[in-house]
Image 1 (cartoon, helix red, strand yellow):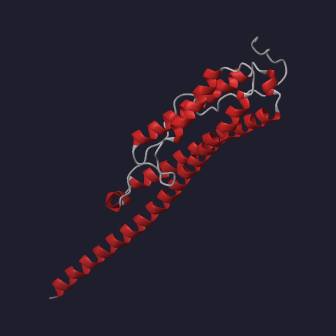
Image 2: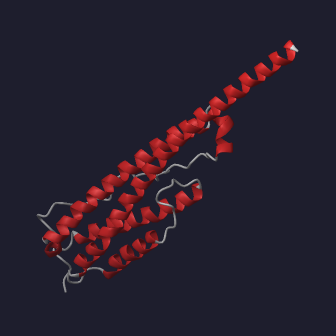
Image 3: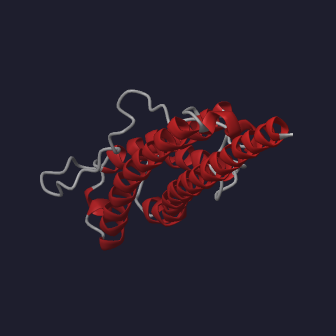
Length: 209
């Protein structure tokens, strides 16, 4: 009888330890997941801010005489592509391919904006307008913020993935629905904001009419 009670007591202790460990792991993983989701929302917010600035930029640039229409079309089309991305803005993606597609389209818009601003250097009248200068400043700040928020997101994912793959949480993570999340895998140079030239002097004359 005593041996049976002893065995039951040991099983009860083991069950308690497992339950306590599971609760602790769940709470820790949930905290890290919430932080990861928050940083993902921050990433989405700065990308949305950039997309919101582009219509005003395009409208301002369209007023410049002989401005290259193909450059404007490229920016407009790139913006249309990023606005079609279907990712939950409040929950970090679990699918690496979905994040790659998201990043590819956003990088495409970054490149198009970079070319537009470079072409704008040839239009001194355009560069002299307060509206265009203000949009340049806002875009530069937004691009810098995008780089910061993507780095913050990757830092949060590092902490989360480390916890998911560490003991004892690894024993419970799958059962609780916690899966590793993908990182932003920036192509070389993509962490550098597109160049924004604020040298308003010595401008190259606009193309001849």
